[in-house]
Image 1 (cartoon, rainbow, N blue to C red):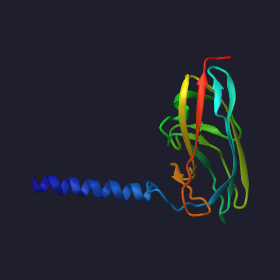
Image 2 (spheres, rainbow, N blue to C red):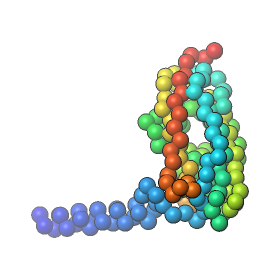
Image 3 (cartoon, rainbow, N blue to C red):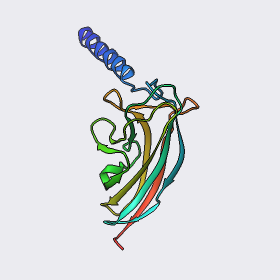
Image 4 (cartoon, one colour):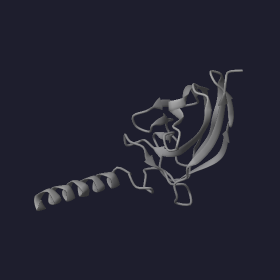
Length: 165
């Protein structure tokens, strides 16, 4: 029994150390950042099967180094955006379900900014509660990028989707 407990303790310690070194904590350091989301706009109603501008936001890199791949993790809320929508256009971004569970959007230079506009098509009717968080995907996995106040910020919005109009 002691051996099993010892092995389990070793596995748990490995998992915790790995999660911490992979940015698994709520706040992390990054190569770039901090960032500021300087403007946002979220759509709150849409028709099923019809294109709509889901959201747009401007991400500014307030750090002293470039963030080579800024990402938007869309899997943080009670409802995951990609589960209920098809992205038709994402300015400067590509869908990336493996690394950031959302969008990988490319380089944001130190002191620079990027406007991201997403046009989507809702697949499902209902009321949805979506969240997104800005991440640094430069290292091959999405790490939270703290904003200027040192905190991670979730951006959440609710969308009601009704039958196509």
